Image (cartoon, rainbow, N blue to C red; front, side, top):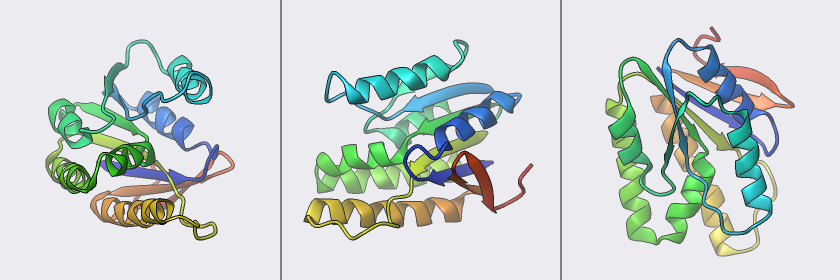
Length: 173
C-alpha cells in the first residue's frame, strides 16, 4: 500500500502521516528529506518533528537519494514515512537538471517495486498565485507533475486541511 498525503503549510499533513504510521502494526522507518541551511527556523521545524516521533522508529536521512533510500529500506512488514517530498524536490532542483532527472526517475522506480507500506507527505503549492521568478515557477510546476505521477501510483491519496484528513482516492480505512 502506497499513500500520498497532500496539504498546505501547517495543515496537519505530517501529523496525519505520523498517526497512520503509529496506528500500523509495522516497523516504521522515518525518511527525512530536510537539510538545515540555517540555525533557527529550519532547525526548529526539524526539532519539532523529532520530538513527535517515537524513539523506536528508525530514521534515515535522504535529502537527495530518496529512491535509493526507499529501495534499501522497504520491506513487506514495514512502513516507510517520507517527510517531505517538496523539501526533497527543492534539494534536487537546486542540485542541477541532471540530478533532478536521475533522482525523480529513481523515486518512481523505487515506488513501483517497493514492498510494504510507503506513506509520503508533500506540500500542495499550486493553488496560489503564479510565482514571479523562473525557479519558483519551475518548482510549482514540477511539484504538480510529481504529485500527479505519485497519485497515479498510490492506492490511497489524502488531502489535509485544518488538521482534517480527507480521503481523495482509495479506502479511508
